[in-house]
Length: 329
Image (cartoon, rainbow, N blue to C red; front, side, top):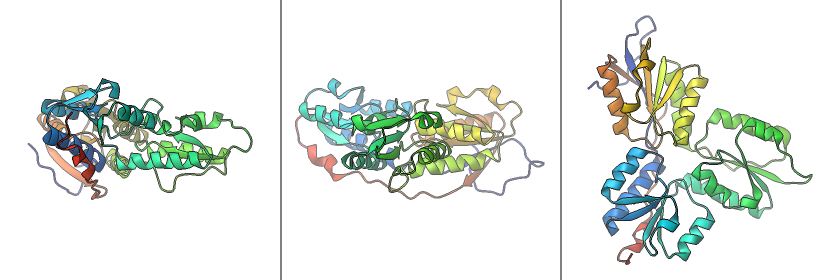
């Protein structure tokens, strides 16, 4: 297997078949924390441990946790009364929390702290009497959970066109928030349109798009500028992975989402000398390395690494995880 090392990149005239790996890539702190919480729950309480929705949006991760005894369900209503139930990294609405409490579920909340921050901002805006414009994708679990904080006061905005079409009664006080896994460039355009149309609109105290999404998108821009093709390892339902593909294409470089090595279409490589490889924030490194090995077998023996930043963020597993120890499910 080829080794990955930082090196000075060759000029186009010197190039031969090679791979350029993006750094950072793959798991973020929120994903590592959420997976760790399921694993720790299994260790403490034994199988089965129920998880509402996919803990993170990656089927490989889900499959591995299922082997350990996790059971994934679409609704808290599917969890036996009184059982352990883990909420996914994407967060849930107050209605889901209330239903879980009514059914006496022993809840372990793996919501990413950065998603929880957006929920807090939504509650604060609603309490201040503001209409909330939530920039994001309406069918994404994170957005569903955030909308649930103030459903009557929240409007989801998915595009510049939708922002342009918004109409509110005179005197309506507005604020905006964003889904954490969006494209920086696309979000910027929507925010500019909102502030153009509603100059008094209030934004969040700090950027809602998470550090990992920003860092991985910046890394994609770097490798897209130096390659003929960018492959993003990630699942189809992973918003941040899909956004990374879009970022590469916006840079003028062809890009595809690859769930795992079995989804690599070798025709994509026709005429390609340099392949950029990265991974979404919920994609495990093992899938990246399997892809690199396959590319090496196809002649891409040289591997370079381009580092745009170094991540040192860690979200610790909360002590409350241990609160249910000894409880009967």
